[in-house]
Length: 504
Image 1 (cartoon, rainbow, N blue to C red):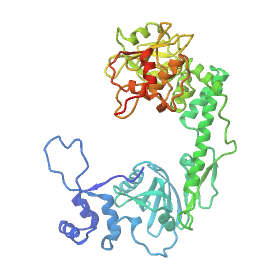
Image 2 (image 1 turned 30 degrees about the vertical axis):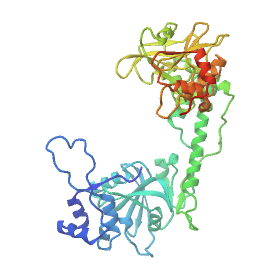
Image 3 (image 1 turned 45 degrees about the horizontal axis):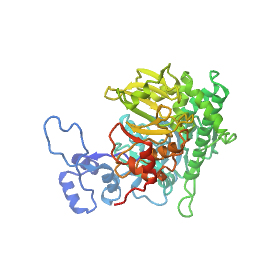
Image 4 (image 1 turned 90 degrees about the horizontal axis):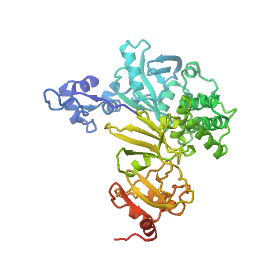
């Protein structure tokens, strides 16, 4: 998206402006607004070989725009930025053309043929103009326009690249191109910018009513919802999330049309013809089913070993992790004699489930485990340096059974010791993480709030949305730089909770 940078050597500036070296020297003294040279962009390979002083370069867009606005060089400047007569004859539509970056529409105008590519990827205008120049420009296109991906004063923003100098891009005005074309220009919302729709468009045609195509995530969820290997609750969970994605995409497309098709600044409407609208005949699809049923469905998918469950779970982790049966991801080194070593002795080796595969995040795993007290998936895997680590999801809550928290140990995460002689990774919600120490201005209020809740109820269900409201004394205690393996007893924690932190 946006205008691509381009830099011109001294010789290239002279070639574009049709002057010699003396003319360039004279130009810089005659025109105060002539663009100043700059240093070339950083080249990582410049240090190899003979060391040379960097040559001056000019910003190509600046030079090209300046030329268009300077009477002496207007005919050598950007085509769509040159001054034009007011009463130019209206252009006409010249059909579609397939290009190296997708289908485009051509318009025969008073300045020549303008090709508009309905794509907002980077360098589209340059790529299409360069391909035309390399092929001899059989369609006599003078300039190629592509979408900028934003809104301007008179319609969608445009990037232009002239076939005479395809390496230079500049911003163009939608209203100017529409005036040259003699009619409103068609515009397709992003999700309906489909090649076949662009090829079929003709001036005056009503907006096509089109089904918004599903994205990859919706396809994955629909496939899981149809899979007979899963039960009805899993089908409901996958369908609910797929419907939510579909509703969002339709709403987004409708909003796109409202934004880009709205009236312009002042009394003159934007010269935009909306070419496609989403099919809303079944919109919105039902979403927001019973929360506990949806959670039960995702729990069963997490325990499955079917590839469709893995794919669906990966979507859910990124989209709505609060529906899943586990909390934040944690990683601790494999080391003997530590609190985590004591915890790992109770782990049970198992075959991998979908939760294990998603937990691995593409890394190789040596072995798969489950915590029999919390049902959390655990795996042993090498870290980026090849050292073995335990990777696991924090539980959302701990089994209480009448026990209470006796202490916490700080070892790469927060560990909870209980009066029934168990050790657990502290629970945590999916969107937070537990830490301690001086955070450079930040405070470990998440860990403080978790400990505060567990001191009162070991089986508490956590809500960390307002973790900054954790007891200030607990937060201050955890803000100290404790060494790995430090243990904080229940009495220490209770004392800190009721003690206001000192102020300097």
